[in-house]
Length: 102
View 1 (cartoon, rainbow, N blue to C red):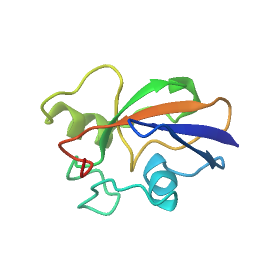
View 2 (cartoon, rainbow, N blue to C red; view 1 turned 60 degrees about the horizontal axis):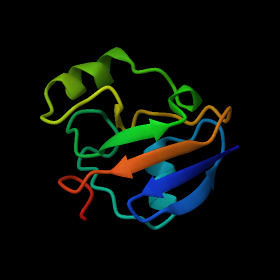
View 3 (cartoon, one colour; view 1 turned 45 degrees about the horizontal axis):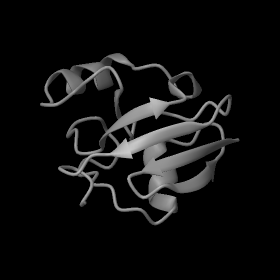
View 4 (spheres, helix red, strand yellow; view 1 turned 90 degrees about the vertical axis):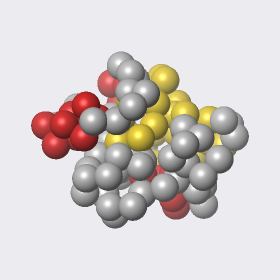
């Protein structure tokens, strides 16, 4: 189990191994856009993982291809629908205003 801190609100939630960051964030009743329902085809759940990047799954080919097409992507970028919690360390994510309803 890992603790996920969601910025900018600072809300902290628990997530079990194998849960996607999207599922954990939505279960915490935090708004995060996700138009393709977790298929890595829209990019609207783009977030930054600021801490605990080794605590989430590696970027797969489909996610990497979608990230390549998104403006504002950086080394901390992930699609919340594709990043799975490994349960090895705590994670700090930032929801981005243009895709998170902020």
